[in-house]
Length: 306
Image (cartoon, rainbow, N blue to C red; front, top):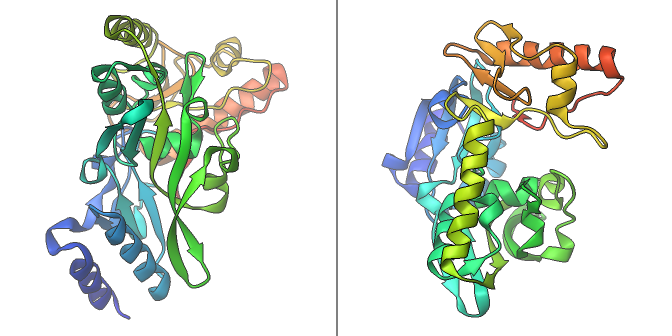
């Protein structure tokens, strides 16, 4: 199948207006970095996601899934194949009886926390300021301020391979194999379509107070005013990445338009014209200096697409 025929197939699956050719990924990542996606598609139902992924597999076209792009470094040269974006087009949040909340993968963590607060449900406050989606939170076991996604998840709805086809499966939390910034979904390459959370009843004012407190702490300590992908490195066991980076004399270090934040050393930020090559070079230099200073090998938390 040639590229024109394949593009036409994508358009027949989800509609011509939701297939964007040569779409700059810089417009879809919080780093504001990345060349053009050959096709960026915006499915709005589970059936459409399944059909797009199946079409890619049958045509041997590479594909990947993108949420808010808040933990992604996209390459300067762009990406061949299909980038499936699940955000506002796939973002329903439903409050169910018994303190359950069901959210599609594209729902933001902030939107889920707000819906829970409105319903008088507590337990997702920790994620209210994490700049990503439920899908990303499930895959990465996102966490902050002593809370993590696995603490509240009941199940994760996934698109999984079944021979030459794909099928939808609800994965119970005990089978998700969550760890620190890791999950079975990540390991297996499954597509997260949504999740069901178990929250608890609480006073609305108390929930809001906790959310406001976490927001203020985040705003005061993190460089939210600059493009970044959040914490650049995973927390090494027994250490804090930011402290190691400071001690190695890297705070404020720059390569091209990329900089180790002067506000929080755990963040690499885009000062305005950074390229993916700048960020990768800076990550490598920080890793080298930290290892030389402490013997600790930092591992990127940001997902480095290629």
